[in-house]
Image 1 (cartoon, one colour):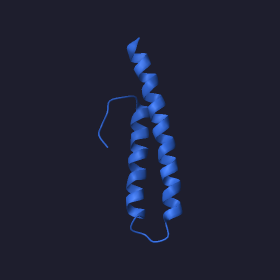
Image 2 (cartoon, helix red, strand yellow):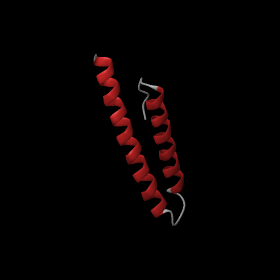
Image 3 (cartoon, rainbow, N blue to C red):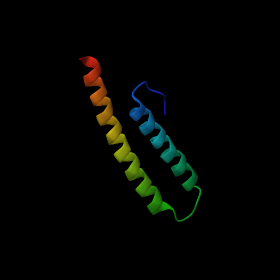
Image 4 (cartoon, rainbow, N blue to C red):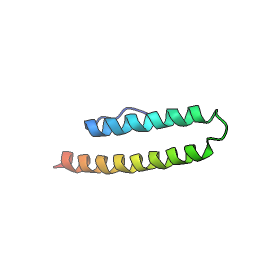
Amino acid sequence: MSYEAGSKECRHLIEAKESLLSTLDALSNINSTDLIQIQIKEIYNILEQMHDKRKKIESATNYL
């Protein structure tokens, strides 16, 4: 994932998403972790939505 400028909150969201991707990569080498991987992907998607909302807020704030 590439770096993007933004608030501390955005940077923390990016770090959290990167950690989940790393976790998914590790779990892909372990048998019987399919359900856990699905749950982590759901959490990743929630964080992605939070990040998108935060970027919109910052864009609106920076626009003013």
